[in-house]
Image 1 (tube, rainbow, N blue to C red):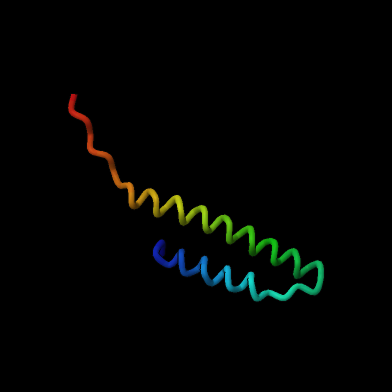
Image 2: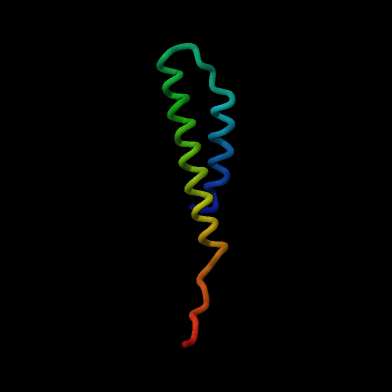
Length: 61
């Protein structure tokens, strides 16, 4: 599921770019989509950073 997150971010960005706004309700929907995009982008960045960093070796004292 985590590897599908970048794909969902791209799809959400495409939906935001192509979403036509003609009323206040549609503008609110677009704002929610943008908020979801920002949350998904941040979550993806954190998750992939944690995966790439990996555990640190323990120090011997």
